[in-house]
Amino acid sequence: MTTMTGRVALVTGASRGIGRAIARGLAARGATVVAAARGDHAAAVVAEIVQDGGRAECMTLDVTDAAAVQAAIASILERLERIDILVNNAGITRDQLMLRMKRDDWDAVLSTNLTAAFSCTQAVLKPMVKQRSGRVINVTSVVGQSGNAGQVNYAASKAGLIGFTKALALEVASRNITVNAVAPGLIDTDMTRGLAGSTHDEWAERIPLKRLGTPEDVAGAVAFLASDEAAYITGHVLAVNGGMYM
Image (cartoon, rainbow, N blue to C red; front, side):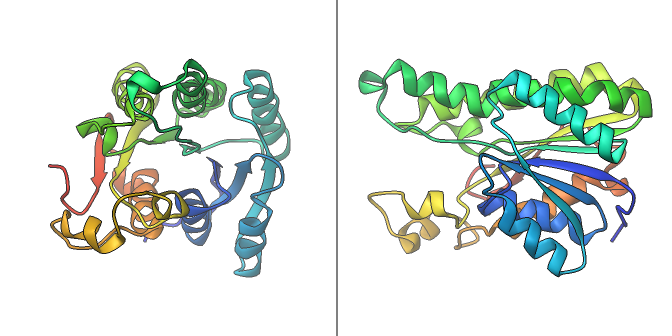
């Protein structure tokens, strides 16, 4: 396992589920983690990291507020002097069939899942370019690859992240900045536990590996893409879906 000691990682949507596991995984490898979420919701994961001997701090951040994002990045740079890893994980769902979907639900999902990634990434690129190093990792979804009825807004936002990843990777490769994505399948989180119409066992039967993924499965993939071992990987979408989409 490559150490990330001395590196600073910003993880959005870090309060629970996949984001919490990513923050803990990066901290376990030595990174100083800034765990960002609305309110003080990331305080619990920061406390867990510190209790385990890691370094982390909590940041209150609404990723849909571009001015707040710029101020947050400036604050991190002032205190910690660098940002090495950005994980764009914050995301929401507002599921509904297209014929019934409200424009507000479309806008909210695109704003949080896609436009916020633009704002956060644009804010960290200048310091990364100055450092001539950096890792940007976007958490997309199998739904962005396969589609899913009742989730046109979510699928569009996650497919957009894939295009964003590939285009930006081309732009910044010469600066030794890699841009990759992780595409989780069905992961056992609060979000999937709220899915109606099927039990976990029924979902698992649709997956070749016969189980839902864990947040730690996704966190391991993110940690790999953030590590030195992945230095020659960019513009890639790493599927963590148990084989449900190939």
